Length: 253
Image (cartoon, rainbow, N blue to C red):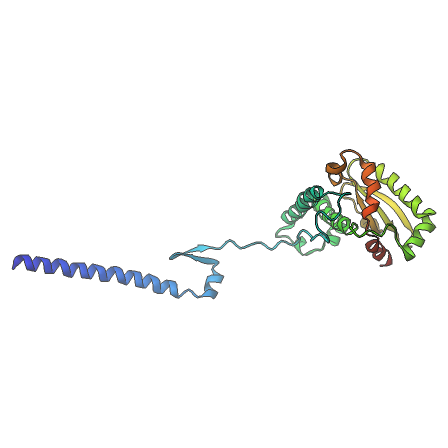
């Protein structure tokens, strides 16, 4: 009888322990179930098993790398796919990343590239201008080249430079003489007078009140893979891929 009594006591104890544990588990589950999606969002939590962990929110970057208006092999053989992968995918992307890091959490994150170029200096200007310059450069290129401009732009070029061939000659001379890294531009001033100008590094003619019409990148990374140190050959082939329709629209603005 004593043996049966001891077994009954042990069984009762086991039942109580099991009930106590189940109660804790059910209580924990009930607490978890009281966290609704709104509260979860408010507390930035995500469910991992039976545990809530902080959610790493993806940052919204003010500036993104533009989408190319053509495939990366569209400009070949004048500019190779490999050059596009490095120039666009590495260098251009790098300027976007650096600018976003510089303005993160500041009022400048709400500004446009134009505003940053016209009003800022130092690293913020350099990276903002390099993004703008590259965006403009990619739009100035096309696989559907029309060889020369038409309409009012061609008339303005003939008036200013004497002929289209003379314009190309002077543009190449200007770009060839642009020492180091920079850009060569066809611009118009407030009187619609045309001019070929050089800027160094990240320089942009908008800071002088001039309107960019056409740009050529003479930083070495723009042509070194395809032409090594032969900038002149790169400039000769540049005319095969100029997007004159885009340049004409810029002139008409």
